[in-house]
Length: 422
Image (cartoon, rainbow, N blue to C red; front, top):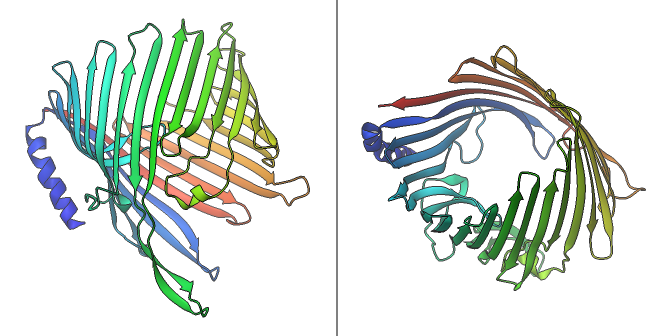
């Protein structure tokens, strides 16, 4: 970890000295929880998180980083302390009104396979058309500031083309190839004489390789249509097709309709690819009725089709400026579930204090004659912002079910935002 900190300082110092603008956020959190071992003996933990988001910019160039340092006070966990790097990249934006690039550790946003990678991103954007591509290596466990030593088995590459030149229409074509080699580990297995022996478990690389197409259309803010198609290039089959639409016949009513066809997303070479599995189809319709500017009612009903079986889902809710309340019920092949949730948050004194409260109760059973499982959750907290750049969060979390009996946790967080022009 010391090497990572030294490397970070060497990378940041020259740019921080010459930057025209430095901005970001620093957060410090303390989180308490209790852990039970196999003998049902408990031990309390107090865990700290220090997070920094830092951006240093000069003209069209920036260095952006986001990292987190976590550790326990007292009882330590494995691999503590953990220094996680989520972002650390150099960026050039809109150069010559055409090119944007990023080099370093960065996030990948894709509807098929997301995550963080170490590599390069290049984008060309001109007159309603955008073409981009990326290539890099998957990051090691715990987001360590290290490059993969096996680029042939731990890589990600992709490309995307977006066209917005047609009025009210967006067309997107993309390709993603993400390969990941699971870590080796040792485990106890039985030999031919049923004696326990320690074995090294090695698994093949597994891969996602998909082509995706999307089209969205908006007309006068009253009609919105969206469709998406994913094709699995490894298994040569349709992975997912979805289409959704929203229509506002008046200022008070909003109608929505959604359909999808989906195959389970299985990695190539994964052990799960040898099992028999089937697709699902889902259709859901909904209505949102606005009672006033502050209050609205919503209702949705869905039918899910499995191979030879069906399940239904119903949701009703009430939204207001003070919060929302909703009830959800599922029945059929997927089991019987009833869930009610309430959430409220409201700012007072020009945002100085914002208390919040959330409650949910869920009961579920696989069949009408099966045993019911109940879950109760509670969140209660407040945000205090004495100054524009500083805020404090305090939250209590409670969970009760047959596995976590009266589980109570606490979170305290300090946030500080800064923005300096030099």
